[in-house]
Length: 405
Image (cartoon, rainbow, N blue to C red; front, side, top):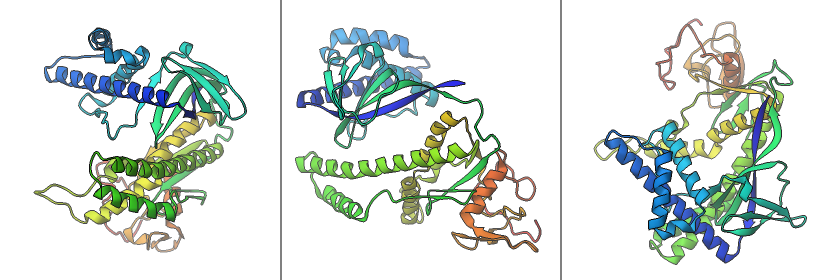
């Protein structure tokens, strides 16, 4: 049995002064992140190393020299350096990104729960006491339900939110209540997720009216002057729409993941490199890409369905049920017959129709369901179609047609 930490997120109701303070705290943390990252990169260029301990000591010296660093809480700045240290260890110093003033969503964390106090004011309101901010009101949309470990303040779509990391005494079971259940999940651009049980999980994340308004706002943004007040208003309006879309996608992924892991002890997914699959095909000036607009449409469809977010939601929900989430090689799962194992590119007649061409088989069903069944049969192993497919072959490469399976 393993303990599980959970998150609770609420919308803050800040005064004008508190909102300005939050923005100032986030700006100082962003500056500390970028300065620390540049220092680490400079050390690596010289063949030396820099980590959290000396940087934290240098931060204390810098606060005496630069008074603006003292405006933000000390623990929030130290936590920023800890997050930077972890990012550099996990991804590499030169792969960690800068925090851009334009693109980065402002946030900062208070890691010491002893400095945090929470009170409930009524049915809809509560308040939390944060270092240097004092008492801050928030919408009490759900019970915190556990011991607070840390608090994160962030801004999204023009609103500030507070997130509590709590220990709700939940534990991961050693075994699922139905230990012999297995499901395969095929992710696509027509349906976000199709299971081997024949369930189709999908929904629209943006309405037609929102889509039309977003296009008009993007056109207005393209004509606006950089740095102008109207440009800022347009960006805020766009962020409001995209924020709703993001929230709907997150809600869909969370609910879908919860239903799937509740019924299955083993969840099998395709091992997809989503970042590479959604990369631009524009190429370079010397070697321009081909079919760039078509690829851009595919990229948008992949990102809109939230493939990676669903995978994260499944991993998170599995902690409460004891399910296992495994990833298998997706090669030929869309061309392989789940009934007899025969593989040819002609098996898939269209985006939705699969009909086996093997003599004496004739198995037919929805193509996505067939692919999900192949993933389920793989059960954590590489899918073998006709002999060893090999791990070096590209998942985009089609096999040569064979007369027999």
